[in-house]
Length: 188
Image (cartoon, rainbow, N blue to C red):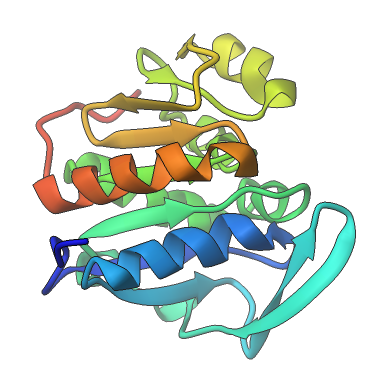
């Protein structure tokens, strides 16, 4: 794979209980494409992944959310899982961090339950999106046009349904991060 992301820094926003493979495989793809990747979290020290409901591995946090500067990043990845998005969507700092990417037109990728954070930030309305089957009604209720596809891209916003779709998600995520800023308006 060409190193299309040389010189780009990507934030990966997680809290405890993210779906591990939805972080590790995209991060691996981002690094292979040349990106510098930073794990950003409300927690300090380590965050813990899950394998669905089973505990996974611990990963060191690179930047605590309270001291993270959104302007340091060219793109944002939000992995899913049963717990991490739920914690992030109720954290005002996380919502402000995410909104800054939309305000500036920087690309955002969210997989599985990750789009729940976009819903809570008020960023789903008027966008084409997908997500895990259980949250597709939430996306529709938030004003998104839901497409039950492996990956959906809408002006720099990449969403995907589940770990089964990572092979489709990763190339689209890299493509959008490589393109950089998009002209889009933040949702109201």
